[in-house]
Length: 250
Image (tube, rainbow, N blue to C red; front, top):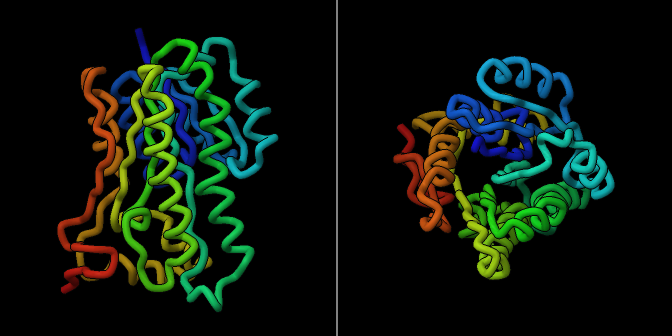
C-alpha cells in the first residue's frame, strides 16, 4: 500500500528536496507551506509522479494548523510519515542585543509549530499503532555557538522533544527520528541575515556545503528501513565542517 507523507516547510530547501525524492519513490504527498504560488508550482511538477495535495498555512498559528489539517480530502487523511521540517533562524546577535520579535519568530515556528503539527497528527498514528515522525533539527541543537543563543535554544528544544516523543510513543510502535544538519546551502542564511544576499553567500563560500538534496536523500534512507529499524538521531556535516564554528575554508 502506498504511503502518505506530510511535509512542513515544503516550498524550499530540505522540505522541497524531500518532496521531490519522495515523489520519485511513489510516496503520496501532503505539501505544506506559507507560499501558495510555490506550493502550486511544486504540486504541478510532482503530480506527474505521485498523488499530491497542498495545504497553505503557518505552522506557528495553532488555529491555522488545525483548520488546514481538518480540511484534508478523505483520501489523504491517513498520514504514515510526518516530516517536521518547517523552521527558521532570525538574526545573529548576542543575547543582550537580541531582537525580541526575532526570538518570538524562532520559538513560535521551530518549537511551537512542530508541537502544533505533531499534536494534530499523532492521534491517528497512535490509533493505528503505526507511523513515522522525522524531526529536522540542527547541529545548533547539539552545541551552542556565539550569537546563536535563541536559535540554539529552539533547536535544543527540538532535540529534547524528539527524545520525548520517542519515549511517549514507544508503546504505540511509532518510529521517531531526528536529522541534525550542519551547514546546508539553502535560503536559511538569507532569512537569518534579513535578505542580505552578500552576507548569506559568504556563509557558503570557500568550501562545499551540504545541499538540500543530500539531507533529503538521508531522510528517504531513514524512512525506508525495515520497520523494526529506527535511526533515532543523526548528525550530518559537510566534510569541511568539524563543529558549528570550525570550518575548513580555502
